[in-house]
Length: 256
Ligand code: PGA
Image (cartoon, rainbow, N blue to C red; front, side):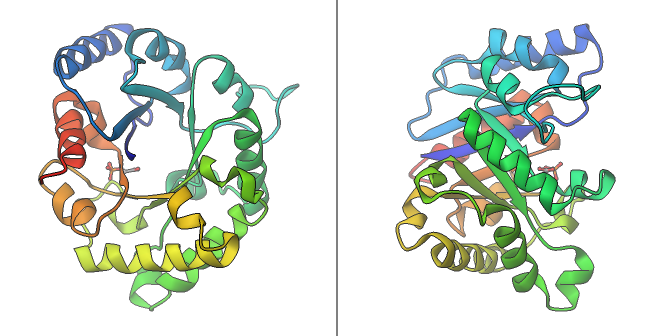
């Protein structure tokens, strides 16, 4: 199974804009069949329930971009992993570089979110990746290994199917820079080695590894298909249903 996961970030600002998105998505997905690909949309929390109502289907599932690190209570403004699950969500993004950067998310916070997500029965998309500076000083390997150890270290082996790792080099997210196929393959090998170290050989069949960062229908072959990733995390292009579903079709097509 492959995954194409759209992170809509803080977009769709009006009901009218959301309605247009639904219409366009419904039009574009009509008649499309995916043999081996799950399409997931992670809208802003305020839209989650209506996305579930309007777009979720056998092919499309819905997720959240973030949750709080406690399950319930007096935490003004927050939502929890069990709310996401109970309102029809199935996925949660954890450790996105924008949250690490703008909210200074700590390892402890990410670990708590991961554990609540798994407890709630969500699939957790855990983002790892190096900055431009870490890359140029040869630290990519060290950073990815550390990020995996930090947050996945306490996930019980029986639950690792709930983990999806997304390699998202920070310098490629929201920019138009993309890594070479070899760079992505290199990162994938680092991730695989680390997962085997943490969870044993069986881990590689059970944990999917995606790529994310400036993917569009033209770059997807080079950065996701050539290095044989299990799918992709898409930011900007997920706002354009035509492009997003084109990426999904390319990922799904076995004869590509
Ligand atoms: P982008 O974002 O596709 O706009 O680079 C990717 C992400 O943030 O996951």
